[in-house]
Length: 83
Length: 83
Length: 155
Length: 155
Image (cartoon, rainbow over all chains, first blue to last red; front, top):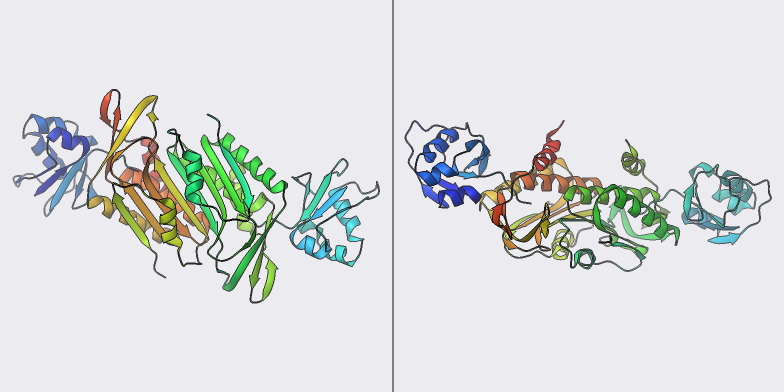
């Protein structure tokens, strides 16, 4: 599963994207954030307040309780500030 | 007192402006339209439905019951269709 | 910084890019510019229009636009405002009117531009005459334009 | 006639006049064109801004703008729509975003442009980083932008 990070999530994680293989117990976007947060200090910092982080699966916004099964690409980013 | 006509009021009257000297009994914009309507067939046609005609005194919109005393220039025209 | 207000009534077409540049050049306090261009359509209610001729009341037209420009400036925090209204003969596809508003924030720019257009439609002394196969006729005012203007006076 | 929809994300500046010409050329069914340009301001809350850097999510950004463009086209009778969003480093006074809407009537053009801007602000995956004397920091999202977007979902 490909994971992408943007804005300060990207800066804190220290990379723009990577491929991860979470265990089957990681079912939702929330689970994935909790699992990623345990991958080290940088991830812990990036995901320390998961409620402010937005997620998208395959280019569509999703809620944090969305099941990730079948996702090709999951992205994490702060609230958007374009326009 | 200078009177100006625009759009179909101008076309019906047959002139764009003129100077008129109404009698003292002509007090309001309504009175002036009624008085002008008696100046001939062209005027009668132009002012046959005075309620649809708008008026301005010295470049400001006025209601038809406005007193005309002191007016330098009175204009008559149909509802506006600019923009 | 004074608010630049430009009001012009002219036969010639306008250049939106040049008008925007004039409103924004050298400034860094503008976050939003809204432009509205009104364009002559080629048909009205199914009838083909060959051209419009715009007549106006010189002196009053400028005064009436300025009065509404001042109202807009007092109601919204604008950094600039431009109104250009063409007169004379205009063919389908050509510009009729331009309203430009600039502000730090987008809502002010949008609302002021809508307000100005609604008032131009109903209060500025301009009249359109249409040329079609049936001859020429004066365009009638629309009730929905009065309704659009009236919403700005609601509490 | 198909509705021309143009969506571009680019580093380069845009030319409003050229974008309007592309939307209106050869057509006589357009009565109103509204443009919104979002411009980089030189200060935010009293702090001098040296520049913004815009980051985006390639692929999703285009998809999200297209999704809202399609919603706008289904809600208002538009004859065309253009969105150009810049990315990369932008200095005060430079353009950030352009939304253009064309319609037979002005209300549709105004409302669709406002709708698109409100949704771009809150839903399109772009992020601004500010450079100031204090260093660089990510711009925080505004609650009032969420409120502006929410008004389009009211009954």
